[in-house]
Amino acid sequence: MSTMTDSQRQGLHHPFLSHLIALLSAYELCPMSTPPPRYDGPADWQTDTILRSLGAVARRMYTAEETLASIKASECWQTNGPET
Image 1: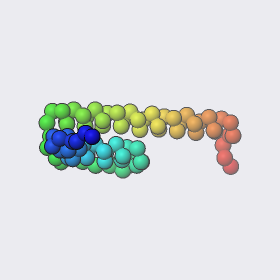
Image 2: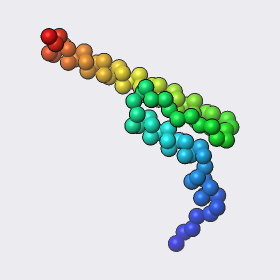
Image 3: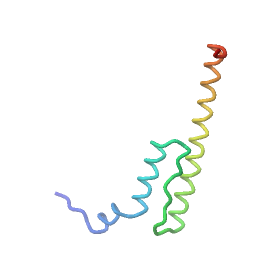
Image 4: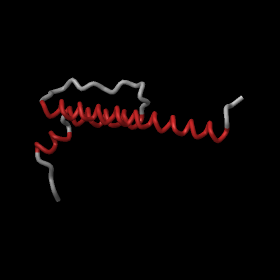
């Protein structure tokens, strides 16, 4: 039977990991208009880099989703014509 060390337990409760869980859940479940949760815990260049990169990925994701919705709407309009 394996047991967790204190450092492993501490890693599971690190404020930044908790924030990442909340942030990824928000990106998965919430619309773009919902502001992402802000991180106000201990920070360093690594946390800053991760947050900056996740923000860039989220912007690209939302742009791709908007583009896809626009393409689908255009295809629907071309197939069905304008709704009257």
